[in-house]
Length: 296
Image 1: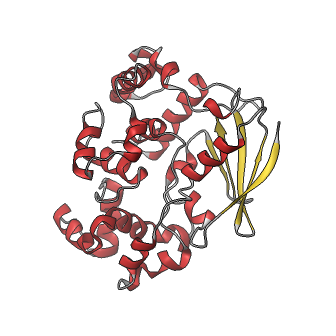
Image 2: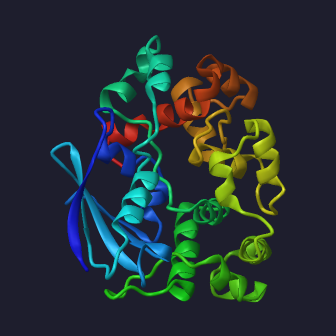
């Protein structure tokens, strides 16, 4: 039945910097209450018999979880929350790599660096494809449409992220007309069918034995996943070799490190080369510093 419990967090974990690390908090079925500093997510799947909402907040070095689910498997729910908040990520090596870079000292002091993710890689894959070549407002609209039209409802009226099976039942035209996914429409339909029929299993990317380069190639075999999308997904499965450059990251780099002038991607790559396998996380933290110092 509905209830409240607590999850222990490590000393180097910041709830605020994790939930606001990037835009996922702004995409359904996540819901951020900045005033109360709570993050709500609608969970589904094997965790409970039906979808339910869980509200997460920080409480004296722990995480407080309040949910309205019935017959919830607490162990599975704890595991899902630890996954989406990256509670088991070890960032000690990343913080060591930042020690000689004074401009990034704020990251260690703020206990930042964990990137919020969805409970499943499938959801992160769909969301990432919906961030390509468009404004953030359109990304929000596409994901909101997906959740509202295909997600199973919880008792409070909120909806979970749709399953691959539910998405696979819909024709390409549905994604064009109802989701407003544009050129992504056939990609969403094809990915959903491939996952529903177990032709591909994105969850295996989490613990893959492949090198990062080979895992990136595997991700790019999925239609709709190019270099940017693959490198963004790599970050969400814990691999930070790629910069995942897009127009926003480039623009922020130009302003912060190149006096507002455009430069080649090679120059950006050289700037973060010193961080080795952590360079993708280093550029993200560098470019988002003002989110926390100036307000979003």
